[in-house]
Length: 117
Ligand code: FES
Image 1: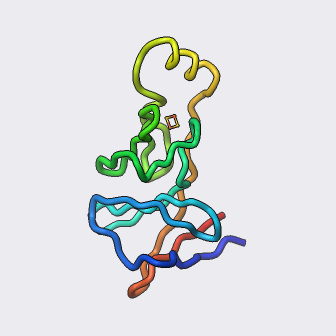
Image 2: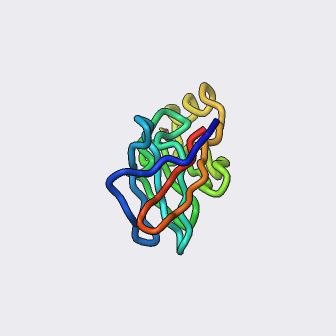
Image 3: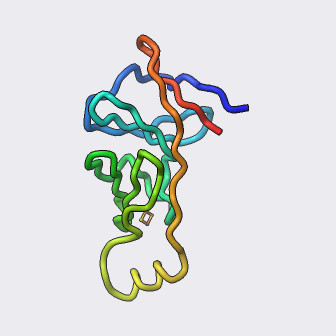
């Protein structure tokens, strides 16, 4: 049964920022958009890019490696890879678009908790 687990070492995040945190040995992307927190798997569904090293625009995170974008509201793919040329065509052919896992987040006083599956 999934339970909420406290994110150690962090009590808040500035709005518009994101950070990779470890929750029970899982890399988790923690982001804050306005007053709401979002959590998702920390690594890109394409080839494992560290999503926290990418860009955050609203609730959309962009992977720093090949530019895939995911919506943190539901993990859906907004764009699968970005660019042109043979490497991108090959990459798109062998790795079909897939979403990232997203996790429920709640804040209790000075604790951020993430619900892992
Ligand atoms: S590893 Fe993220 S887009 Fe390729």
